[in-house]
Amino acid sequence: MINREQLIEKIKSYGQQITSKVAEIPDYPEPGVSFKDITPVLEDAVTFGYVNDCLTELAQSLGNIDLVIAPESRGFLFGAVVADRLKTGLVLARKPGKLPRQVIEESYGMEYGKNLIQIHKDAIHPGQRVVIVDDVLATGGTAKAIASLVEHSGGIVAGYVFFITLTYLDGVQLLGKENILSVIDY
Image 1 (cartoon, rainbow, N blue to C red):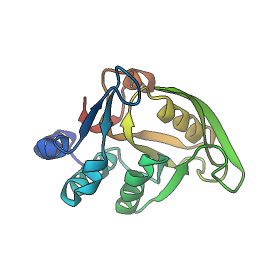
Image 2 (tube, rainbow, N blue to C red; image 1 turned 60 degrees about the vertical axis):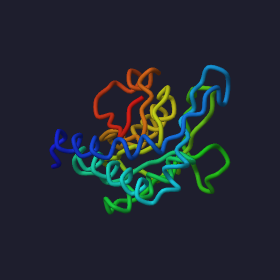
Image 3 (cartoon, one colour; image 1 turned 45 degrees about the horizontal axis):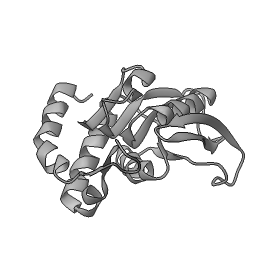
């Protein structure tokens, strides 16, 4: 297993390169919100590679992982890379009406409202260790709903891996603080 202290030091060494590419948009999508725009990170191959390296190593630090689960849409960008690098399957957590087979669903609160998230009913098997990968941890509603779907399926939530955690919101507290890992904290 990867030494977390060494991993944190490695991530810090990438820190300035990564944070310099995250654009902060004040008062978007509403007054008082400082939106973290990750598209400049995605547009820069080197920085995008650093982020994916960090996310993968954070996921590896959680031990044996059978599946990665990622919510749409930006979670797909990172979750697919992490799943590929870990040599695991990828489960897509989607909004209603996007999955073609039988689904299970969970409602959740977001920073700006409420929604539902679904996965295929047969996507996760009992006992599988699953890591939840997403771009941003804000209020924690999406991640908590996904964790409920994993547990409802008999899976085990090994942990959560985020590109960015907004520490001034309550997401970390909602998820319980344990095994919540991120590349950048704001």
